Image (spheres, rainbow, N blue to C red):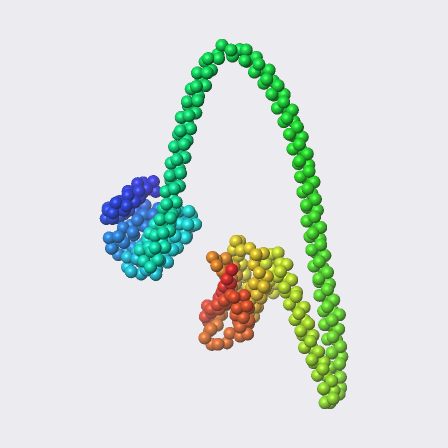
Length: 448
């Protein structure tokens, strides 16, 4: 049925270009009656309906907007850039016809981006021409771009024609030379037996030299492969040595932190505990004054622990080779003592090694806080964690099907406040939406 519909599609295209919009609509209707293209061939359905919609726009008939939005949705779902461009271009033309220049410009700009991405120069020319009508203030800019692009296309077309002309000329020249060669061959036919003898001799010499050269080349190639194998083994050995050094460095750092905690913090806490133990026996004012000095020392210990924790966090997220592994481990830890079903959706295009370690740290902490709140308060059975990369930002979403809460109650708690503050520290935005009985959604938007 698709093959039968194609002639109608092409005829309607020609009628549109000639301005016979009523006939174009009639041919589209004939094609649509051949089959239920919405199911069997959504692409053909979209092509036909786009032509029907633009024809209606140009004769000021109703119903075009609904058709164009449907074809735009189908084209985007199919990933068909051609349908996506055409639908957006016709939507821009529709909104221009009803005087909504803002929407017209938005759809036209989107269509232009698709045309540029797919190197659809003709489509880009059409959008430039339409933008000049939509935005008269900047028409000079669009017209200049239109003229520049049109000139470039003409230059390319001219160069292509020159290329084919040159090929034709060279073909004629080769034919002429071939005819001359045949004439020359006829002239020397009497001498060919003598030349044949010399040719066989030189051919034998050539074959001998070729075989010798080929053998030497094979020997050199074998030597090169052996050298390359040795070089690969040396590189692999160096990689193993480097990995071993990294592991040794990690172990040294772990021992250093452990030593700092044990010898520094634990020793000081033990000393303070012993000194404060006297309060239970002699709680007079003089003893209290002495003990206040130890309370101040607890504050110093707090600063020291904070410093160690800060250094440890920085190292953790700066050295992490797989951020998603850390997120998976976080979820697995909750799975061990919870019946919640987790689903992680991660965009494979995200290069976590390229993202700043401070951003990864704050994202991880927000995830940690959100999952702890869900486990404690939400009574959820399913949690979905989504990480997607958009054009200019990273989107991290945590949704659950728990009991939810009323955001208007003003009882969001310190956990939500911390999430907002952490997002602000990395120039991001944290949006929390919920309703009683409908679960909670936390959307973290981070500019890239």
